[in-house]
Length: 562
Image (cartoon, rainbow, N blue to C red; front, side, top):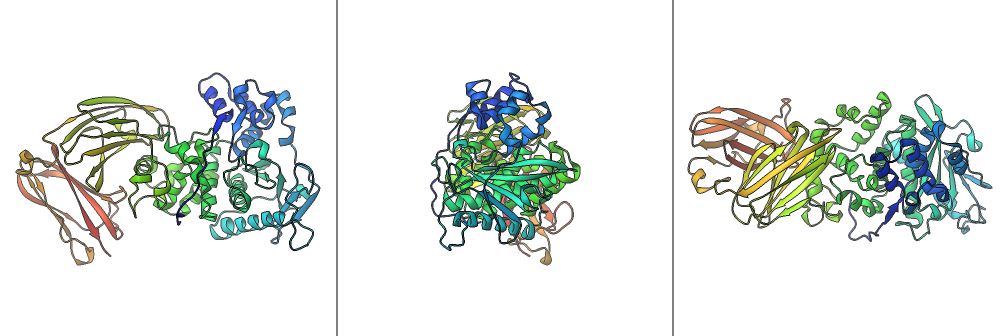
C-alpha cells in the first residue's frame, strides 16, 4: 500500500444511539433483546425508541451490524418494534433496474422523488451514468475479492429481486447518516442469502468521502459482507465483519483512505477490547486487519474467515489455530506497532502508512520519580505509560495479574535513537534513555487484568560503572551474518557465575530463538546457527539479540543475509 502525500480527515462525531445502547447493555440496564430493538429503532425509526439517548446522531459508516443483529433476534423482537422496522423485513421496491456488464449484479434505482439517482446520461443509453458506475464498482469488487483474493462467491438468492444476480438497491441514506448496509435474508445451511442497500448519490454533507470514491469503497465493503454471510450466516462476528470490510476497501482503493477518518476511535481508546462494537470503534479497529496483513500476509484474513466457516463458532478461541503465536503474541506485537504512529513512526518499520495515523493515547506520563500507579486492562486491549527519568537509569517493578496473559515492551528513546525490547512481570531496568515507555498488552480472550508499577531512579540500571566492569556484551560476529558461512558468535563476560538468558527477535519483536543456561564467571560466548526454534533458517533482515544475567541487561543488533 502506498500512502498519499496529504489527506483531509474529517472530524466524525457520533452521539448516543448505538454506543449508548451498548453501554446500557454492558451495565445491565437493558437486556439483549431491548438493546437490539433500540439500536435498530434509533437508526431507522427513532420516534419509537425507549429513551431519547438511543436515537442515533452522527455518521455510522455501515449499518450491517444493526440489521444483522435484528435479523438474528427476529423471532424475539416485539410486534411494536417489528412493525416500526417493517422496511428491514422485506425487500425494497424501486421502479428501474440495470444488470451489470458481468451479469452478476442487478442495480435497482429510481429517477424521481427522494431516492432519485443523478440523471446524467452522457452515453445516452437510457441508463444514468451513476447507476453504471455502481454496477462497474461491484463487478470490480467481484474480480478482486473472488477471482484474485480467492474468497468464495456469495450464495445465490433463488431469484429474489428478479433473477439470480446479486441485488443492490439505491436509496437516499443521507437521513440515516450511513453509506449502506447488507441485509441477510434467508438461511441456507450455515450461510445466508443477502442483498445490499446503499446511498443513491453520496452527496450528503454527513459523508466523509463523497462521489464515486464513496461508491467504490462501499461496493468493496458491502460485497465483502455478502461473502461473510456465505462463511457464516448467523450473528456474533459483526465486529470482525466491519474490521475486515473496512480493510478490504483499502485493498481495493488504496488511494482513498476513508478508514483514516475513524482511526481516532481506536487510538484514543487502547484500553477498549478489540471486539467492541459501538458504531465507531470497530471502524477505527480496522487497523488490526492492516497489522495482520502487513505482519503475516494478506491471506491471513481469508484464513480467519475460513476457520470461522469451518467451526461455525463465535468464540475468540477459533482464531488460535490461525494466528501465528496465538492471541497473546498477536496482541503483543499489535500493541507495539500501535505505538509507532504519527510523529513516532519509524521509516521502513511497522505500518507502511503509520505516519498518517493518530498517536495512541498514553494512560500516564511520569515526569517525577519515584512514582507508582496501576489499573486494569480488559482482554484484547493495551495500556501505555511514559517515563521521563532524564539521562539516568530507571528501575521499573511490574506486578501483573496472571502474567501469562500479558505481553510487555519497553521502548527507549535517546537523542534520535529508538530501541524496544520485551519485558514481563518483575523488575526491569534501563539506563541512558531520557524517554522510556512501557507497553502492556493483554492477549487473553476474556476478563480484566490488574497491573501495578513502581518506577524509581536506579543508578545500577543497565550498563553502569559498577556493573560494566564485571559484565559486558560484545558485538555479535560476523555482522552481517550468513549461516552458509558458519555460526554467529555473541561474546559476553559475567561478573559472577549465574543464569544467562539470550533471546533473538525480529526487528518487529517476534521471538525467533532463545537460550537459557547456567554459565561460570568470566568470559563466554553464545553460538547461534541462524535457525528459529523450529529449526528453520530465518529470513534475511535485522535481528535484535537481548542478553540478561541477574540485573545486567544489554541488547545488540545483527544483520542476517541469505
